[in-house]
Image (cartoon, rainbow, N blue to C red):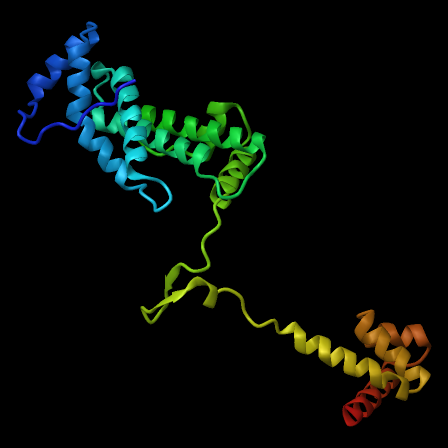
Amino acid sequence: MSYPQRRDLNEHELNPSEERRLWERKGAGDERAREELVRHYLPFAEAMAKRYRTAREPHEDLEQVASMGLIKAVDRFEPDRGVPFKGFAGPTILGELKRHFRDRVWTVRVPRSVQEGIAEVETATADLESELQRTPSIREIAEHIGKSETDVLEVMEANLNRRPVSMDRTMRTDEDDSVPASERIGTEDQSFELVEGRLTIEQELPHLDDRERRVIKLRFADDMTQSQIAAEIGCSQMQVSRILRGALAKLRERV
């Protein structure tokens, strides 16, 4: 299959009446009118391809994919519906570009069932965008493909996460400086200090008497209130409070 060639910038551009006649001829089966329409809108498809240009994917390949989407849009377009051609063709071309990246540019390999789900949701989204002239809702996509909204959301989440973000990419800070993403990911885990403190206390617990150790365990390991501890060991809540204060004072002194 040959791809459409770029229109010479000096060529005569179509006015609305000429374009309308071309659509009428194309509808009657005129192949030359079809080709002229494709050439006329080729810069529009190429502009969409530029939005998806990456270092890993040659721009020429993306232009070919966008051109194929344009051809499909020209073949499916119905002027009598009153929708501007670019509004109809945009989602079709975008769908072809997304499918290209889905099938060719996978960083993270996912199960085939997930790939098929992503393809199904993307196709439904493109079809609904053409029909509704807006971005469809999750509910509308789910109804279109006969699945639950949860299934659609899971597929969309998988689609977002299939290409990890480079840790070397730069990010803007609040001070408008660019820093690598790796420098902004992760925070100091405050639990390390808790672990160290717990180990230290466990080393000192043998220096308490049996009753003090039991009260410490019931209060901080079993998370019991002083009243519950009092009922457990058979004393008053005030006595439990005194035992806790004394035990903690001993531990602080030793630590």
